[in-house]
Image: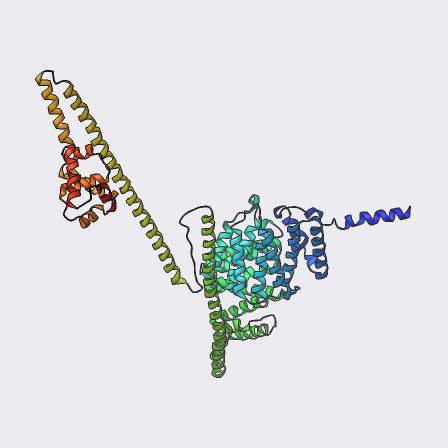
Length: 587
């Protein structure tokens, strides 16, 4: 009995063990993203224990593989990348390869939302850990383009990830692009009209991005808008009892007042920010606010306080967490130079002015490098835009849409773009013009054929009428004189109407030349002694009119037509068996 119980446990127990994440299996991202967030991304207790966190990721991946849920397998891999690319506990050396492998897997299986998020984690790694800003910003840009292809229903965190693109551009120093993407993110709705700030897991993300928007407004000197954003951050932080953000938002409001020279408002806010920043280890933020507070007291000529604040700033800058001290020293050293000048120490004042120059040159050098990186990114962006346009053109071509636009842009191709587009438009217009000319020529030829055919038909109809009237005249020879006279007069008028006037011959010649291009010219060159009437005869013969039709048009009898043929044969020494038609066909 005990053996049977043990066997049953061995069979059943694995199902219970491997069913830990059953509630996540075989669901779409929109159905399980909140559960994944709660279990992993925002599970602070689990994330604090790296080994336990990795173990849970492994369990998730194994369950997903067993269930054949390839998207959930990708989610597990993405959790590893998130840990290694952004967390201080991560193995940064693995982040790049893992991201590359997952991107290939996502592309192969058409997992667009996985690709978007993976590119953003890769972008954070490149920018925050590897210092490869161009590669980082390109990953965020690629994620942006991918987000244009997916709906909010399929990707409910689209707004959040749009914000991340804006935040990346802000960190890159491209404030104009950051503002553009930030505005687009704000216009992006969330599922079921929910708000990010109402989601307990997303509130800190929203606070961070609202703060970034305030910084962008402050950079544009739109101080009222900046303060509005910072107050929004402050109110949200108070509601969340987040003292770190309470201090940060207070400091940002204080710096905004400082920039407006409203020092009485700025001082208490900056002091509070310094206190909170030191408490939570935000050393860069504390130093920045402390230097601005020092400058205020310097302008108020409160030298004892200035000296205390200078010393405090230097102590903060000695902290190893501040990786870029020159960023702060370029502002602190000029203050120190002014201070020592005020207290009568010219030597130290001069030394600190020189140190300020060195610190500024160092930061300018880095800014120039960043500007160069911006320019390189701009050119790469142009190339990417060209590739996207080419892809769209190819798609249109496959759908049988004519006149596709193909844009090919080289690396340094600002001017080349205009040239290539100009050439492309030129050839398109040229082809259209040639097609129009060809169509016009074809229409003219068809019209000439139609007019010649109509011309022949009218002659034929009139000849038929003349023959009928002539027959009636012959049948009424015994009738009264007057009716016969009338019929003869009508017959004469009809025969006269068939004769072509000079104007009609000219119109006939124009249409004939369109149909048989160059015939009359070659006829004159080969037979220069032709009379005008002989030329007309040969032209009518070329149209293969009957002798009766030619006689009517030339105003001669049937015998007269035969005489034309006889005279031409004699004039050009054609043999008796020679035929005028053969002569015409040779021309």
